[in-house]
Image (cartoon, rainbow, N blue to C red; front, side, top):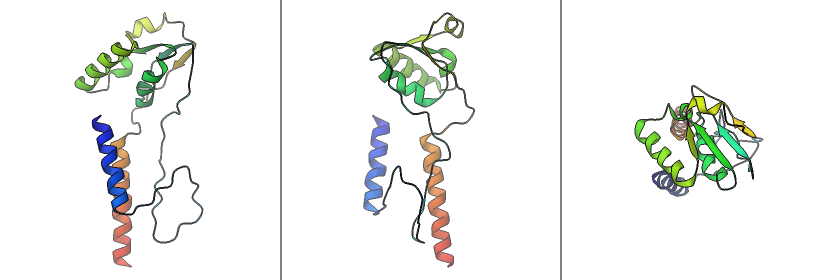
Length: 151
């Protein structure tokens, strides 16, 4: 809920500032009055599964979020090590939310006994997140403004 409020704030601010946003657009021509902010990294895309046993053994935020959708039509497991890097409050709340929808949080040892149809196994030291995106956008805009001032 808090995240949605933050997104709505940025949407309103960008509209107020007359910022044009183009998604899924290839950079072809950019006049001197624009900034192209293209993600350096992306999260894995959501794929819908039905009737499968899914094991998430990954710290990627996307998979942690996708679990809520996948559990609607699948049996979903997530390992404890997938959640280890989260702060204690977020981990606790996420585990409680998983329990509420039927995602099973299992020990790393238990993961070996799960006969999953699909396994998400990827760990990153540094992964895309909203904070990094905001920071990158800030510095792109700041450098753009400084360039305009010095011209």
